[in-house]
Amino acid sequence: MSILRVVGVDPGTKSFDVVCVEGGKVVYEKSLETAEVAKNPAILIEAIDAANPDYVVGPSGYGVPITFGDEVRDARRFAVEVLLLSTEKDIEEGVKAGELGIWVYDALAKVVEHIVKSYGRKAIFIPSITLLPSIPMHRKINKVDMGTADKLAATFIAVYTLAQERGIPYSNINTLVVELGYGYNAVIAVKEGRVVDAVGGTTASIGTLTGGALDLEIAAHVSSWSRWDVFYGGIFHIGKTYDLNVLAKAYEKSEEPLASLFLAYIEGVAKDIYRMLAVEKKIDTIVLTGRHSKTPLVQKLLREYLPDAEVTPSKQLKGASVSKEAGQGYAAIGEGVVGGVFNELVRHMGIDRACGTVADYVYHPRAEEFRRRVVKSYVETVAKPRLCRESLVTQNA
Picture 1 (cartoon, one colour):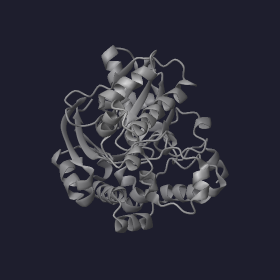
Picture 2 (tube, rainbow, N blue to C red):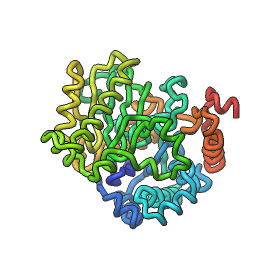
Picture 3 (cartoon, helix red, strand yellow):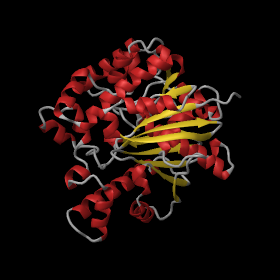
C-alpha cells in the first residue's frame, strides 16, 4: 500500500477547512473564515497548494458519484449546476444583492475550476448521502438533500473512529451520526457500518440558518423564491444573532423570545433523531459531530431527551487539532478512493458505488424541469456519468 498525501476541502458555512491526511493521520490542516474565502478565493487555493498533495478532494456540495478531475468537461458549469444545484443567473443576482451564501458559491466554483485545471486526474469529487446505494429507494422519494457531501464525510470519520476505538469490524457499527453544522443539521442512520437513512438540510427540523422543513402552505403562498432563501428562516435569522451561545445563555435564564428559539432548535434535533430511531431500532450509539455539537448545553439537553441512549462526541483522526470532522472525512474518503488506508471503509460503505444525481428521486410534477436540468447538466459536464440503472427517473426519462 503506497503512502499518499491527500487533501480534503470542506466548504463550511462558517469556515473552509483544508486537511491533509497521510498514512491514516492528519499531517496538515488550515481553517479559513468563509467570509474571507468568499472575498478572496485565492487564499483557499494557496492553502491547498501549500500542502503539496498527491490528490485533492474538492468541495463537492450536493455531491456526485466519485468523479476525477480529468472526467470533468466544463469545470465551471459542473460546479455551479451539478455541485451547487444553481445557475449562473442565481450567482450573478446573489452577488449583486450582497448575499454571503452566494458569494461562497461563486468562490467555491472558482476553487473547483482551479483544482480541475491544476490537478486533473488527481482531483476527486465525492458523493452526498442521497447517492449512496445502501439507502433503499423508498427512503429517497422526493428527497434531494439527505445530507450534503460534508455530512457524509463527517459520518465516515464517526464510523472509522468508532471501529478503531472499540476494536470491532465496520459491520458491527450501528449508530446515529448527528451532524450539527453552523447552518444546517443532519441525522444519519448507520446500520452495520453503512448509511441506510438520513434526514438533512432543509428536510430536517429548523436549523440555525435554514428554516428547515417548511409547511407546503408557506411555499404555496409565496409567489417566487430565490436560490439563497435556503439560508434564511432559522433561529439565527429570527433571533438576530449568529452565536448559538447567546441563545443557550438566554435559555438558561429563561429570557424570551431567545429561549424558545434555542428550545425549538434542540427539540428539532431530538425529533429528527427519533425519526431515524422509528425505523432503525438497533442503534447502540448516538455520535454528535459538527460545530454546534461542541456546545455543552446542546450535549446536556440531547442526553436528557435521549435517556436510554449512549450520546457521545465524535472522535477525530490522529494529528487533528483545528479542523472539523467533515474536513478530515473529505481527505480520508479521497485517500480511500485511491487505495490508501481508508480503502476498506470506502468500499464497505459503498461510496465507490454511488450513482446518479440528487434530483433522481424527485417526482413532484412542479419539479420536473428541475430534475431534467440537473440530470442534463451532470451528463453533459462529466465524460463518464454514472447513472443509476434502478432509478425510476432514469427508466422514465
